[in-house]
Image (tube, rainbow, N blue to C red):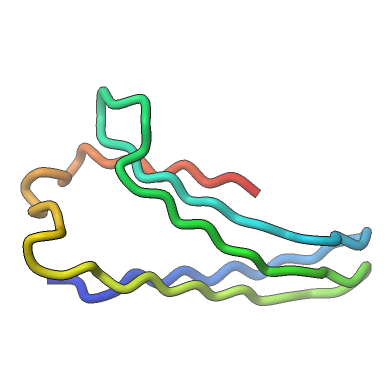
Length: 81
């Protein structure tokens, strides 16, 4: 079992960003609505800065999770900023 998923992004911006957000939608093949959405807020980004953003999502555990055989090769993650 996988107890957590972690992702690290390194980015820079020439202009200031007032409220940088990131949303990951988890989609199973053939389903138009996400089965789960992870919404993160970084906040203010200074112009000309270089930043690292790490997010970690912990597994729900037990009966609340899909089996790996149910999602293997059938899951798409759509990321929006």
